[in-house]
Image 1 (cartoon, helix red, strand yellow):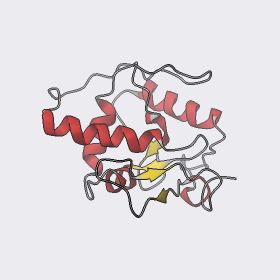
Image 2: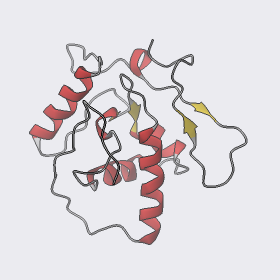
Image 3: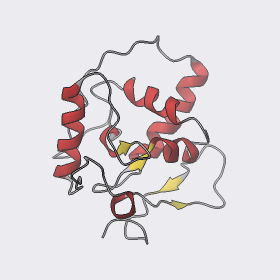
Image 4: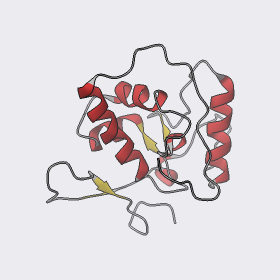
Length: 150
């Protein structure tokens, strides 16, 4: 278990309609969590972007399942992952969507009148490591790099 820094919020328990992940899913879900941990405050990533960076291109839905399966004590900033339209994806629990929006707004992310985030302004542009050894994180935070929110 990882300690939280001030200002980080626990993810509320959300009912999950599927069984626990199998061994292979656990490994891929851990890669998802590693990528999500790299998304800096004040930035967002899309489900598809996280999937690609986790080595699972085309598996955006699986990223959603992995984030939904997180426990309240997990430390990946789940709230920084939104859909490709720049919207918070509905989960069936409106209070979780409201919490996600509140957490993003507390980090300086703005929503337009259509409840969308401008991905051009707030979208995370990670610096991909070209020569990374197998099993290492797919991206660095990109903090201070072009594309990261200034």
